[in-house]
Figure 1 (tube, rainbow, N blue to C red):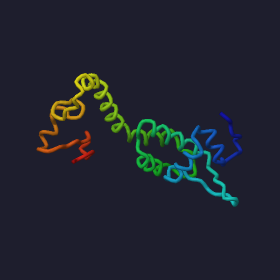
Figure 2: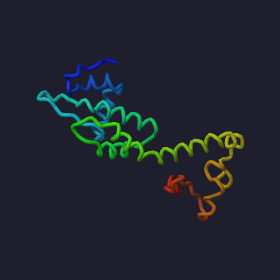
Figure 3: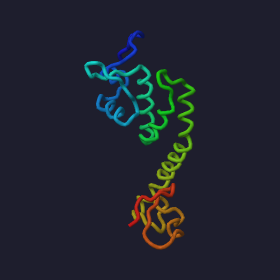
Figure 4: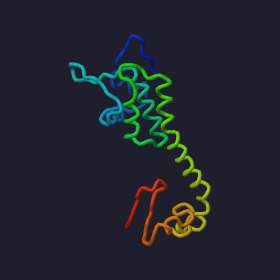
Length: 158
């Protein structure tokens, strides 16, 4: 990974890409979504402050664990401008996601533990399937076809 001299305070999009491992197109996408920002030179070239490297690393790590971009953007909006975020800044943001990640881990563990049973019977019955309808929870919510997420939000309702 190329090192930047300490005297360089801004990076080109190519330098940011090389240092962060994110494609230039991904950096442009992140900027269009408000996850990172740049200033434009008189020649209309993007320039990023050095703290953008940490922001990109944060975005990529959050994406890898499934945090939605809108949630990432909200978190980044809480970080200070014009200074590199500290370890405490990152700890505060990541702590806010702990329960969401724990829920996701529990869902994945349940899927892993019951996947063999599901494949074994092949039914995916909404009446008995431990993955789609544990304890016939949908039946208790009334008649008709329902497929709901664990958090209660509608996934499909024909």
